[in-house]
Image 1 (cartoon, rainbow, N blue to C red):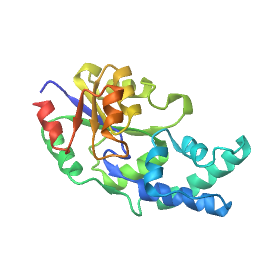
Image 2 (cartoon, helix red, strand yellow):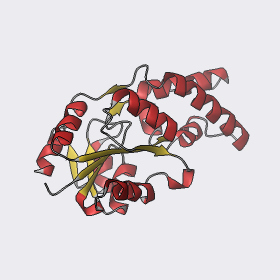
Image 3 (cartoon, rainbow, N blue to C red):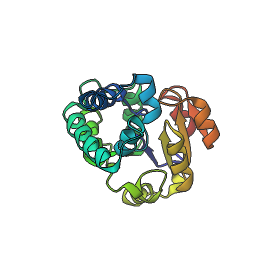
Length: 214
């Protein structure tokens, strides 16, 4: 096969985590008597890490309040990050097919690293490795540094690799890493956002990825 590795975004791509994320953030907001938001609104908030989520939920917050809410959000979400989160239909079957064909699989998420690993270890097969989340704010997608490091760890060139995600940030990080940029239509953002960002392909179903690999 032309491509030897597929690296996935996590939230909105392999797993639907919006309910656990939203519920946790709404608990933080309710504690401080702030307005809460519905699940559809949270789909527009996520994708840039937990700090960014807090800032979007409380745009008037000063740095001290952001840090307090970030701490609370991390604590609450860590306890509940797999309560309602599930793999999207067809994604586990896709992973099995790719693994059976010798394709190397990994995850790179803007979700904080320990949370990424917790969700991935609960819902994804162990052969999806490494699973890496955000460790330092300046390294979050679309910065391609960690994505390129994953390619090196897998022993593949970026040109032999696909990055797959559901937001413009995912398309941009793939482009920045000189990888094939593939979007998914079932995630947290509209297909138009992926097209505008320059996606090479957009999948309607997980199995559509097989056609790209063949």
